[in-house]
Image 1 (cartoon, rainbow, N blue to C red):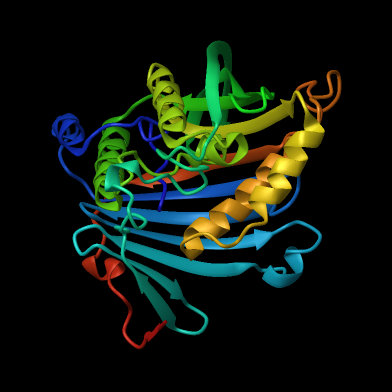
Image 2: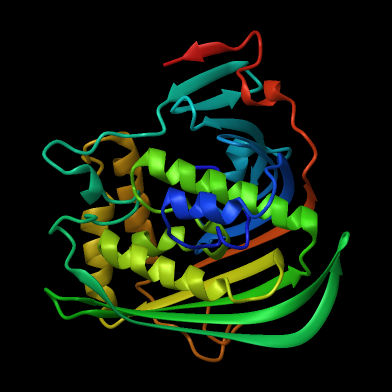
Length: 358
């Protein structure tokens, strides 16, 4: 999903009707947000840099991205200039179009996905979770801690003057079958700029789309809160969907108390396991299994395996940028501009001359 960078989308879980009531406070407005992104990947695997332009209008969204991989292997495939990609999501039509500008082709997939055979729709797992509402997951989230500190530090990013908040989030899990415990810590530098009328309109419009998308998709939770790397949470922990959704909801509720619109979010995730050998073995057996019921689940399972292999290292106190060794995952997102000017309707259509693939 196209993941909006909004105050509340960073990261609450709610239903569509309350969202629409909330958004009615502000007049509807088309939104264009430009961002730069930098990810360290999973211990360097899949590291990339990107620029994005995201546009939202009611139940329509479009994202134009130019991504360049920076890791030793994948950067060979993306080249020096990187790859361009366009995604258009039409909740009103239940369609997602993935465009290839270079070859002028596109693929079409539905936003809503049917549940696996014999599985109720509400029990579906999020991509990356290890079993969702089913009994397959034996990992439970035992404890979460959240703290935020107003550092008082200010800095200018382009046209935005922002204030820095230091966020610390800790999460502990336990495998009820083996007794193995894992410790996850997220540290984030969260820079916000004071609210303006346009920023509130932009935030409300993106939040409304995100909730409508989640309802159409059928997972019951708002899309991918990637700015904090929370989308990696299900992959790293292998916890069930309900546990992960609750942790994400609690996290978002706390983030919502911080004043201002997020301009820059710099996140580092650290993790360690009480039994690194067992964790690596479990990750290898589960993460390399590509026999899932559909391609999306197979890829998510494979990435989940990589994520769990990455935590088979102890946090190394005294080293690294935060004194915890090398991050398992890191990401930095900076908003460079926000506009609530009208977006031409043609931006949410397949361009003339494009041919359908698949």
